[in-house]
Image (tube, rainbow, N blue to C red; front, side, top):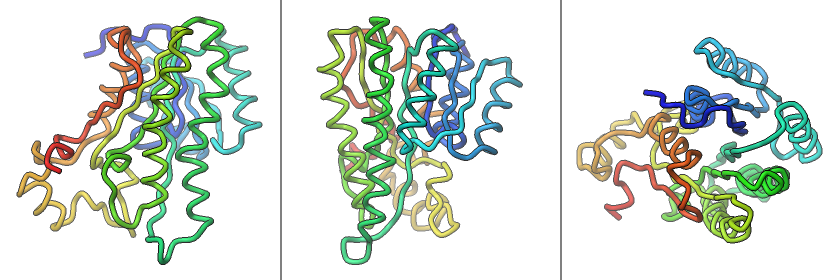
Length: 259
């Protein structure tokens, strides 16, 4: 049940066209935020905007590739000009390409680092001056349990997500004097478009069910849903989180506890 926890706050969400980003955006809007949707795919961007507005929420939409920093700067300036402030930044956009050190490419490495880590740095760098001016802000970055515990065939993805964890702690120290908190969320297995590999949702396979559900490698015995993460994001964006910074909320159904 929505409680107006983010009433009239301006929240930027990257990768807002689907999956975690779209769900976080809808949840923020339900809590009263003015949500700024940033997404490179126009169709999914507009779909999220329509869903929010149909539910009575407020959403602004900007088509954006988060690695286009000149365009990113222009969008941030336009948002400030229109709304007068930026209260919340959610760094969510991500890509994944699979391969080991024996068969991946430098192109794959650079692409994943650019979207999954460098864009977190640049997005925060562009937004932070406005938050400093306001004396208030919340930076929330979506990492992964793969930033703590590596999985095979995802070296660049793991490295980027681990980098977000370390960088979040640095941001917390650097920005705390200005009233800005920086925290992260580390999801476990989630049923999102990114869980599809070669057209198959890995969280629905027999092998996954046998190991993670039936044997309770995930103690809660189910795959995570985007709504499990969006609730954590609302908490980190709200005043309930006023004395918390530099932390990583693990949302994985208990998976990390079984390692």
